[in-house]
Length: 313
Image 1 (spheres, rainbow, N blue to C red):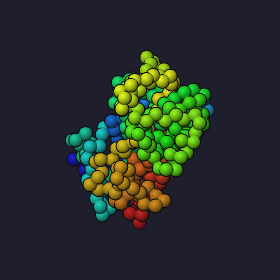
Image 2 (image 1 turned 135 degrees about the horizontal axis):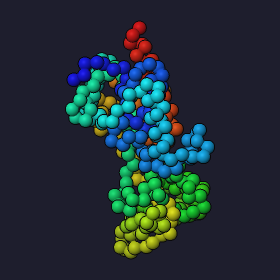
Image 3 (image 1 turned 135 degrees about the vertical axis):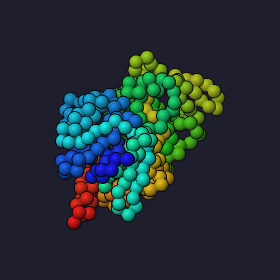
Image 4 (image 1 turned 180 degrees about the horizontal axis):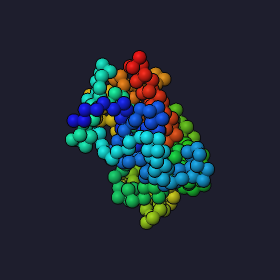
Protein backbone atom coordinates (compact mmCIF):
# COMPACT_ATOMS: atom_id res chain seq x y z
CA UNK A 1 0.00 0.00 0.00
CA UNK A 2 1.20 3.48 -0.85
CA UNK A 3 1.76 5.28 2.45
CA UNK A 4 1.58 8.82 1.12
CA UNK A 5 -1.78 10.54 1.56
CA UNK A 6 -2.58 12.60 -1.54
CA UNK A 7 -4.53 15.80 -1.30
CA UNK A 8 -7.01 15.03 -4.08
CA UNK A 9 -8.00 12.05 -6.20
CA UNK A 10 -10.38 12.55 -9.14
CA UNK A 11 -12.29 9.47 -10.28
CA UNK A 12 -13.26 9.78 -13.93
CA UNK A 13 -12.01 11.74 -16.92
CA UNK A 14 -14.91 13.36 -18.74
CA UNK A 15 -15.55 17.12 -18.79
CA UNK A 16 -16.34 17.07 -15.06
CA UNK A 17 -13.24 15.11 -14.05
CA UNK A 18 -10.79 17.06 -16.18
CA UNK A 19 -12.25 20.43 -15.13
CA UNK A 20 -12.00 19.38 -11.49
CA UNK A 21 -8.38 18.40 -12.14
CA UNK A 22 -7.62 21.75 -13.81
CA UNK A 23 -8.95 23.73 -10.86
CA UNK A 24 -7.40 21.40 -8.27
CA UNK A 25 -4.02 21.60 -10.01
CA UNK A 26 -4.14 25.39 -10.09
CA UNK A 27 -4.90 25.32 -6.36
CA UNK A 28 -1.68 23.30 -5.89
CA UNK A 29 -3.61 20.24 -4.69
CA UNK A 30 -1.55 17.96 -6.99
CA UNK A 31 -4.59 15.95 -8.12
CA UNK A 32 -4.34 12.42 -9.46
CA UNK A 33 -6.93 11.53 -12.09
CA UNK A 34 -7.91 7.92 -12.74
CA UNK A 35 -9.35 7.78 -16.24
CA UNK A 36 -11.57 4.73 -15.77
CA UNK A 37 -12.89 2.30 -18.39
CA UNK A 38 -13.73 5.04 -20.87
CA UNK A 39 -10.97 7.68 -20.82
CA UNK A 40 -12.55 10.97 -21.79
CA UNK A 41 -16.06 9.82 -20.91
CA UNK A 42 -19.12 9.75 -23.17
CA UNK A 43 -17.77 12.54 -25.39
CA UNK A 44 -15.24 10.12 -26.84
CA UNK A 45 -18.11 8.38 -28.68
CA UNK A 46 -19.54 11.71 -29.85
CA UNK A 47 -18.55 12.99 -33.27
CA UNK A 48 -19.28 16.70 -33.70
CA UNK A 49 -19.63 18.91 -30.61
CA UNK A 50 -21.12 22.24 -31.64
CA UNK A 51 -22.68 23.52 -28.41
CA UNK A 52 -19.62 23.89 -26.18
CA UNK A 53 -18.53 27.54 -25.86
CA UNK A 54 -15.15 28.42 -27.30
CA UNK A 55 -15.31 26.20 -30.37
CA UNK A 56 -16.99 28.39 -33.01
CA UNK A 57 -16.42 25.84 -35.77
CA UNK A 58 -17.31 22.83 -33.61
CA UNK A 59 -14.92 20.08 -32.56
CA UNK A 60 -14.83 16.29 -32.55
CA UNK A 61 -15.62 14.82 -29.14
CA UNK A 62 -12.41 12.78 -28.77
CA UNK A 63 -10.26 15.78 -29.80
CA UNK A 64 -12.04 18.01 -27.30
CA UNK A 65 -11.39 15.53 -24.48
CA UNK A 66 -7.75 15.28 -25.53
CA UNK A 67 -7.47 19.06 -25.19
CA UNK A 68 -9.05 18.91 -21.72
CA UNK A 69 -6.48 16.27 -20.76
CA UNK A 70 -3.56 18.30 -22.14
CA UNK A 71 -4.67 21.35 -20.19
CA UNK A 72 -5.02 19.37 -16.96
CA UNK A 73 -1.59 17.75 -17.32
CA UNK A 74 0.08 21.03 -18.29
CA UNK A 75 -1.16 22.56 -15.05
CA UNK A 76 0.19 19.66 -13.01
CA UNK A 77 -2.54 17.00 -12.81
CA UNK A 78 -1.24 13.41 -12.77
CA UNK A 79 -3.51 11.57 -15.20
CA UNK A 80 -3.27 7.80 -14.83
CA UNK A 81 -4.81 4.97 -16.79
CA UNK A 82 -6.66 2.81 -14.30
CA UNK A 83 -10.01 2.11 -12.75
CA UNK A 84 -11.12 2.59 -9.15
CA UNK A 85 -12.62 -0.80 -8.29
CA UNK A 86 -13.33 -0.30 -4.59
CA UNK A 87 -13.42 2.46 -2.00
CA UNK A 88 -13.26 2.76 1.75
CA UNK A 89 -14.43 6.21 2.73
CA UNK A 90 -13.87 7.60 6.19
CA UNK A 91 -17.21 8.82 7.53
CA UNK A 92 -15.57 11.04 10.16
CA UNK A 93 -13.45 13.12 7.80
CA UNK A 94 -10.34 10.97 7.97
CA UNK A 95 -8.25 9.47 5.18
CA UNK A 96 -10.05 7.82 2.26
CA UNK A 97 -8.76 4.63 0.68
CA UNK A 98 -9.24 3.68 -2.98
CA UNK A 99 -8.37 0.39 -4.69
CA UNK A 100 -7.05 0.69 -8.26
CA UNK A 101 -7.59 -2.21 -10.69
CA UNK A 102 -8.32 -4.57 -7.77
CA UNK A 103 -4.71 -4.45 -6.54
CA UNK A 104 -3.15 -1.07 -5.72
CA UNK A 105 -4.40 0.97 -2.75
CA UNK A 106 -4.04 4.75 -2.74
CA UNK A 107 -4.91 7.20 0.03
CA UNK A 108 -6.40 10.67 -0.21
CA UNK A 109 -7.68 13.53 1.93
CA UNK A 110 -10.32 14.43 -0.68
CA UNK A 111 -12.02 12.50 -3.47
CA UNK A 112 -13.92 14.01 -6.40
CA UNK A 113 -16.27 11.54 -8.07
CA UNK A 114 -16.79 12.22 -11.78
CA UNK A 115 -17.73 8.76 -12.95
CA UNK A 116 -20.62 9.92 -15.14
CA UNK A 117 -23.58 7.90 -16.32
CA UNK A 118 -23.98 5.41 -19.14
CA UNK A 119 -26.88 5.55 -21.56
CA UNK A 120 -29.04 2.47 -21.68
CA UNK A 121 -29.07 0.95 -25.16
CA UNK A 122 -31.26 -1.51 -27.00
CA UNK A 123 -28.42 -3.95 -27.59
CA UNK A 124 -28.59 -4.13 -31.39
CA UNK A 125 -25.44 -4.66 -33.47
CA UNK A 126 -26.54 -1.92 -35.86
CA UNK A 127 -27.02 0.45 -32.92
CA UNK A 128 -23.40 -0.02 -31.86
CA UNK A 129 -22.05 0.16 -35.41
CA UNK A 130 -23.91 3.38 -36.26
CA UNK A 131 -23.39 5.09 -32.90
CA UNK A 132 -22.24 8.61 -33.75
CA UNK A 133 -23.30 8.17 -37.37
CA UNK A 134 -27.00 8.76 -36.91
CA UNK A 135 -27.53 6.93 -33.62
CA UNK A 136 -27.47 9.03 -30.45
CA UNK A 137 -28.64 8.96 -26.84
CA UNK A 138 -28.91 12.75 -26.55
CA UNK A 139 -31.34 14.76 -28.67
CA UNK A 140 -30.26 18.07 -27.14
CA UNK A 141 -26.62 17.27 -28.03
CA UNK A 142 -27.15 15.97 -31.55
CA UNK A 143 -30.62 16.99 -32.73
CA UNK A 144 -29.26 20.04 -34.53
CA UNK A 145 -27.58 17.81 -37.12
CA UNK A 146 -31.01 16.56 -38.30
CA UNK A 147 -32.62 19.94 -38.84
CA UNK A 148 -35.44 19.57 -41.37
CA UNK A 149 -35.02 15.78 -41.54
CA UNK A 150 -37.03 12.81 -40.30
CA UNK A 151 -35.98 11.05 -37.09
CA UNK A 152 -37.13 8.33 -34.73
CA UNK A 153 -36.88 8.26 -30.95
CA UNK A 154 -37.28 5.18 -28.75
CA UNK A 155 -38.91 5.45 -25.33
CA UNK A 156 -42.15 6.31 -23.59
CA UNK A 157 -41.09 8.10 -20.42
CA UNK A 158 -40.56 11.75 -19.54
CA UNK A 159 -37.09 11.86 -21.11
CA UNK A 160 -38.35 10.47 -24.41
CA UNK A 161 -41.31 12.87 -24.41
CA UNK A 162 -39.08 15.85 -23.63
CA UNK A 163 -36.60 14.91 -26.34
CA UNK A 164 -39.41 14.28 -28.85
CA UNK A 165 -40.73 17.78 -28.08
CA UNK A 166 -37.26 19.22 -28.60
CA UNK A 167 -36.75 17.36 -31.89
CA UNK A 168 -40.18 18.42 -33.14
CA UNK A 169 -39.01 22.05 -33.15
CA UNK A 170 -36.15 21.40 -35.56
CA UNK A 171 -36.99 18.21 -37.44
CA UNK A 172 -39.50 17.63 -40.20
CA UNK A 173 -41.03 14.49 -38.68
CA UNK A 174 -40.50 12.65 -35.41
CA UNK A 175 -41.56 9.02 -34.97
CA UNK A 176 -41.86 8.02 -31.33
CA UNK A 177 -41.45 4.26 -30.90
CA UNK A 178 -43.22 3.07 -27.74
CA UNK A 179 -43.01 -0.58 -26.70
CA UNK A 180 -46.22 -0.57 -24.68
CA UNK A 181 -49.73 0.59 -25.50
CA UNK A 182 -49.34 3.86 -23.59
CA UNK A 183 -46.80 6.47 -22.62
CA UNK A 184 -45.19 6.29 -19.18
CA UNK A 185 -44.51 10.03 -19.19
CA UNK A 186 -46.31 12.40 -16.83
CA UNK A 187 -49.73 13.59 -17.96
CA UNK A 188 -48.39 17.07 -18.67
CA UNK A 189 -45.64 15.68 -20.92
CA UNK A 190 -48.11 13.35 -22.63
CA UNK A 191 -50.41 16.27 -23.46
CA UNK A 192 -47.49 18.29 -24.77
CA UNK A 193 -46.11 15.61 -27.09
CA UNK A 194 -49.53 14.50 -28.34
CA UNK A 195 -50.34 18.08 -29.34
CA UNK A 196 -47.37 18.28 -31.69
CA UNK A 197 -48.48 17.85 -35.28
CA UNK A 198 -45.20 16.48 -36.59
CA UNK A 199 -44.83 13.81 -33.89
CA UNK A 200 -46.32 10.40 -34.65
CA UNK A 201 -46.50 7.99 -31.72
CA UNK A 202 -46.30 4.33 -32.72
CA UNK A 203 -47.51 2.13 -29.84
CA UNK A 204 -46.64 -1.56 -29.35
CA UNK A 205 -43.60 -0.84 -31.51
CA UNK A 206 -40.08 -2.17 -31.05
CA UNK A 207 -36.93 -1.64 -33.05
CA UNK A 208 -36.09 -4.67 -35.18
CA UNK A 209 -33.09 -3.14 -36.95
CA UNK A 210 -31.48 0.22 -37.64
CA UNK A 211 -30.81 0.48 -41.36
CA UNK A 212 -27.75 1.89 -43.11
CA UNK A 213 -24.16 0.93 -43.85
CA UNK A 214 -22.18 4.00 -42.78
CA UNK A 215 -24.98 6.35 -41.70
CA UNK A 216 -28.57 5.80 -40.62
CA UNK A 217 -30.96 5.60 -43.55
CA UNK A 218 -33.99 4.12 -41.80
CA UNK A 219 -35.33 1.86 -39.10
CA UNK A 220 -37.24 -1.41 -39.35
CA UNK A 221 -39.90 -1.65 -36.66
CA UNK A 222 -41.82 -4.60 -35.28
CA UNK A 223 -45.38 -4.39 -33.94
CA UNK A 224 -45.25 -6.67 -30.91
CA UNK A 225 -49.00 -7.34 -31.14
CA UNK A 226 -49.39 -8.15 -34.83
CA UNK A 227 -45.73 -9.08 -35.57
CA UNK A 228 -45.94 -6.78 -38.60
CA UNK A 229 -42.64 -5.28 -39.72
CA UNK A 230 -42.41 -1.85 -41.27
CA UNK A 231 -39.60 0.39 -42.53
CA UNK A 232 -39.42 4.09 -41.71
CA UNK A 233 -37.18 6.42 -43.68
CA UNK A 234 -35.28 8.36 -41.02
CA UNK A 235 -31.84 9.95 -40.89
CA UNK A 236 -31.51 10.09 -37.11
CA UNK A 237 -32.24 7.48 -34.43
CA UNK A 238 -32.39 8.55 -30.78
CA UNK A 239 -32.48 6.19 -27.81
CA UNK A 240 -34.20 7.66 -24.75
CA UNK A 241 -34.77 4.69 -22.44
CA UNK A 242 -32.76 6.12 -19.57
CA UNK A 243 -29.26 6.40 -18.14
CA UNK A 244 -27.53 4.48 -15.38
CA UNK A 245 -25.10 6.45 -13.21
CA UNK A 246 -21.77 4.70 -12.69
CA UNK A 247 -21.97 4.77 -8.91
CA UNK A 248 -22.36 1.14 -7.78
CA UNK A 249 -19.06 1.01 -5.89
CA UNK A 250 -20.15 3.90 -3.66
CA UNK A 251 -23.38 2.34 -2.40
CA UNK A 252 -21.97 1.36 1.01
CA UNK A 253 -21.02 4.94 1.82
CA UNK A 254 -22.88 7.57 -0.15
CA UNK A 255 -26.49 8.66 -0.26
CA UNK A 256 -28.10 8.19 -3.66
CA UNK A 257 -31.59 8.16 -5.11
CA UNK A 258 -33.41 5.05 -6.31
CA UNK A 259 -31.74 5.32 -9.73
CA UNK A 260 -28.26 5.54 -8.26
CA UNK A 261 -27.60 9.28 -8.76
CA UNK A 262 -25.50 10.62 -5.89
CA UNK A 263 -27.16 13.17 -3.64
CA UNK A 264 -25.31 16.36 -2.75
CA UNK A 265 -25.93 18.85 0.02
CA UNK A 266 -27.85 21.97 -1.11
CA UNK A 267 -25.85 24.49 -3.17
CA UNK A 268 -22.71 22.38 -3.11
CA UNK A 269 -20.99 19.25 -4.40
CA UNK A 270 -20.57 17.81 -0.88
CA UNK A 271 -21.80 14.25 -0.36
CA UNK A 272 -22.81 12.90 3.04
CA UNK A 273 -19.20 11.84 3.66
CA UNK A 274 -16.76 14.66 4.58
CA UNK A 275 -14.08 15.12 1.95
CA UNK A 276 -15.96 13.31 -0.80
CA UNK A 277 -17.45 15.42 -3.57
CA UNK A 278 -19.34 14.62 -6.75
CA UNK A 279 -19.63 16.34 -10.13
CA UNK A 280 -21.08 15.69 -13.56
CA UNK A 281 -23.59 13.08 -14.63
CA UNK A 282 -23.02 10.91 -11.56
CA UNK A 283 -25.27 13.41 -9.76
CA UNK A 284 -27.01 15.29 -12.60
CA UNK A 285 -29.97 13.50 -14.21
CA UNK A 286 -31.57 16.67 -15.55
CA UNK A 287 -29.14 18.56 -17.78
CA UNK A 288 -26.46 15.98 -18.70
CA UNK A 289 -24.45 18.37 -20.88
CA UNK A 290 -20.68 18.68 -21.22
CA UNK A 291 -20.77 22.34 -20.23
CA UNK A 292 -22.84 21.73 -17.07
CA UNK A 293 -20.61 18.78 -16.14
CA UNK A 294 -17.55 21.00 -16.49
CA UNK A 295 -19.23 23.61 -14.28
CA UNK A 296 -19.82 21.13 -11.48
CA UNK A 297 -16.25 19.87 -11.85
CA UNK A 298 -15.10 23.40 -11.11
CA UNK A 299 -17.45 23.56 -8.12
CA UNK A 300 -16.20 20.24 -6.74
CA UNK A 301 -12.56 21.34 -6.90
CA UNK A 302 -13.37 24.63 -5.17
CA UNK A 303 -15.33 22.77 -2.48
CA UNK A 304 -12.43 20.34 -2.00
CA UNK A 305 -9.92 23.20 -1.74
CA UNK A 306 -12.04 24.94 0.90
CA UNK A 307 -12.51 21.68 2.78
CA UNK A 308 -8.74 21.13 2.95
CA UNK A 309 -8.20 24.72 4.05
CA UNK A 310 -10.73 24.34 6.87
CA UNK A 311 -9.00 21.17 8.09
CA UNK A 312 -5.61 22.83 8.24
CA UNK A 313 -6.82 25.79 10.28
